[in-house]
Image (cartoon, rainbow over all chains, first blue to last red; front, side, top):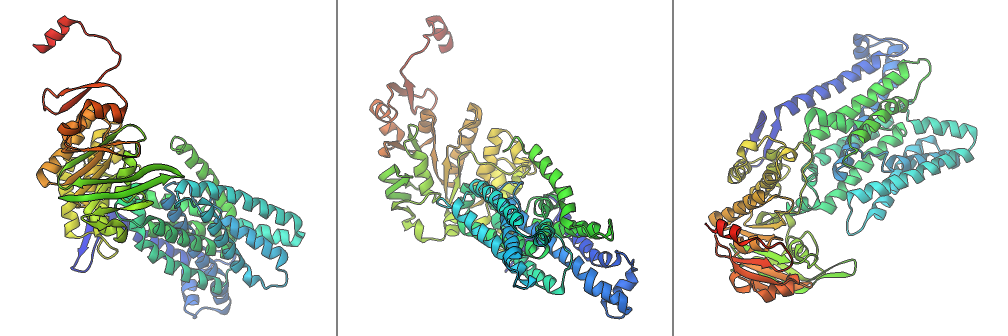
Amino acid sequence: MKPAITVRSSRFSFIFEKRTVIINLILFFLAVFACVIGPMLGHTLLSPYEVVTALFGNGSGANEFIVMQSRLPRTLLSLVAGAALGVSGMILQGIVRNPLAAPDIIGVTGGGAVAAVIFLTYGAGLSIQFLPLAAVTGSLLVAVLTYFLAWQRGITPIRLVLIGIGISAIMSAGTTFMIVVSSAVTASQAYLWLTGSVYGASWNDVGILVTVVFLTIPVTMVFSRSLNTQQLGNDTALGLGVRLQLDRLILLLFSVILAGSAVALVGAVGFVGLIAPHIARTLVGKTHGALTLASASSGALLLFGADLAARTLFYPVDIPAGVFTAGVGAPFFLYLLFRNRHHM
Amino acid sequence: MKSLEAKDVRFSYDDKLILNDLTVTIPKGKITVFIGGNGCGKSTLLRTMARLLKTEKGMILLDGEDISTRKTKDIAKQMSILPQGPSAPEGLSVEQLVKQGRYPHQSFLKQWSLEDEKMVSKALRATGMTEHALSAVDELSGGQRQRAWIAMTLAQGSDTLLLDEPTTYLDMSHQIDVLDLLYELNEKEQRTVVMVLHDMNLACRYAHHLVAMRNKTIYDAGAPDDIMTKKMVRDVFNMECMITNDPIFGSPMVIPHGKGRMADESSIRAKAK
């Protein structure tokens, strides 16, 4: 037995691996720490003291504006969006039993992108506030389409991935087509969105995403035991009494809601959903309860780091965070393909 | 006494009929083995009985109750299944695998009860896997790996154990090792064991009850001594044979006709000594 803590009473019983608990706590505190670091850095450097006083409304007017209206919401949005993408990726990799699965690969991100570009091209009369709604609708529609096309007396992971990849390709063709036919202004707006940028984060965005993440993650943890048994294969999971198709549908839905709403608010940031679960697995192992929290924190810190680099390194140019996640993510994806070449 | 029963069960894969309205009863507390030629439907029958496949018609009764009307988690407490060639994720330890067997007894609030802990260590002991508890399943030998999976089904705490070709891909000594383990589990704890085997001689040696299948239905069922005849082998396997008795166990032994090299008499006499 690895060092573990067991908590038991007549009504409940839990077991935690010590190492896992410590790592998850460290990750959580790093994310909290990011909430101070994020607002400190930028064109005007602020001290931790200035940030904290601004947070509590005692700072100077200028500092308070920088922290409360710009840097803090942006920091928070990058953290929660990253967490959402990380958990979404973990769920997909879990139900598909393949470490290469990610929301961007099975078309969830692509669906959001097409919907967003259509919205930017044809929705001229509508307020830009509706863009997230359009994107999340697109993600959901594509996910439903993929699910039904993959259905054959139930869903098999391999069908889901293959059809997802196909749909994803169609979506990117659709996006390109829309950009080609739209005006130059719309096209550049669309490009910015498509690469993924946390630029222009509002408290409203933060509120929406925090709600989604804090509702979805605990429920995902309830289903984490089902995900653990699913790793043993369909037959074993069914034999152990898992309601396989139902659990899979619910988990897939969570994954889409998480990725869809993150992508809707920060744009089509790629690769966070792919990498975060891998980092989490190397840190806390393969048990999905602990893995859910670790994937959330890893995703949060990844996107936070990418956005921080994006807005500070090339100041005054604000580079989309997606450029940095892709810069790290694409080589990592190739590395995974290379490492898994014997298992495909 | 009956524990598991298939009644008028029909099943087809994409319009291809696999099981044609067949009925079979599994005796409680005994070892039952399904035999038959390739594609006769023996694995499919086992999988329908384990509720891995849904019957088109007819029903599966577990202790007299239709399993389709019961909660799948409750069934898992009474019946466990070891599928053919199961694969564990890379690096999963034997202990982690065996712990999964407790799934039907757990809930979000009850994740690791004292009972869970006891059953897991009991299952590891019964299969002789305690010392390998921390080893990775995918790094064990074929026979040990199969033991680890059997330990998982034991941790489930069910009376009935269904195994789909548990000896496939194993060399002879590991086959015997796995079958001996199942024999002991039946002998000591009166667990009902149902499995599909390819080797007729091993089937005759370990089974109390044989179910021979042919052409999508049951050809014959009963004690190996009663049903293992030349005619049965001819009809079920489409093969001529001679039936003698196993020199060690006395159970029926099938020696197929066909071609082969004849050994010279001096070497036969030497072996007999």
